[in-house]
Structures are given as structure tokens and as C-alpha cells.
Length: 164
Image (cartoon, rainbow, N blue to C red):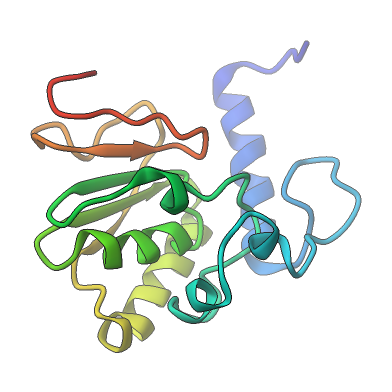
């Protein structure tokens, strides 16, 4: 058990993912090496997926492929908690189309900067006008008044209309 309080734990995580955003280091504190270069392919992402996102969005940090199992529909709203470099956000944007919305939330300023840079450089090229990247922690909501929402927290919690 850790002797850290929740704020200290968040700071440890925030500091580690700040390093991950700028260097090729392992995804968890204490990991001993860089992420495998084919990490995303091993999770079921395709070469087409990798080519459909801005450079730098895929950091190889995933523990699953929510796009493969979510069955997103046009017009839906997706809230990606722990969005990192925006990889899943950009892929979800294609699935929900121009009438849908994708909100990526991360608590690490460096990850937010990376995702926003990907949006700026790739937004026009890939058509990601429906993606927003927000600063926040899992305890706060950037989507309180939305009627239909899919929430991805890398543990794939999914809520449909009327559920909490």
C-alpha cells in the first residue's frame, strides 16, 4: 500500500506522463524500458488507423482498442478520459462524423499540448473539426449536460442515455 494521499498520487502520475509525452519511456512508473514500437498494432489497431492520425498522436500507451469494441454511431458524443496524445480521440472523430463530438480530457499539461498540436496540424488534413481537448481530472466533468455520451477511461466504462 502506498502512503501517498490522492493529490500526491496524481502528482506522481502527472510527472511520469509528462516524461512519457516527451521521451520514449515505459508507460508505468517503474517500467524498465521504452514501449514496443508495434504496441498499437498488438492491440488491434490497423496500419490504416495509424496512418489516419496526426504524427505523434499514437504514443503506444494503450491497454486496449476502444474503437474496435465501441460500435460508435454517427452523431454520438465520446468523452475520452486519459486522452494522452489524442490517438483514440482522432479515430473516434471519424466514427461519429461531423455531427458527433469527441472530447479528450487529460490531467497532464504536456499530453494536452501534444494532443492540441496534433489537432492543429492534423485537424484540416484529417477533418477533426469535432474534437476538443480539455484539461481536467477524472473527478470533474466537461460534459455534464450532454444527452448521449460514451465515456472511455481506458478501462472502457461506457454510459448510454439515461445512465450514470
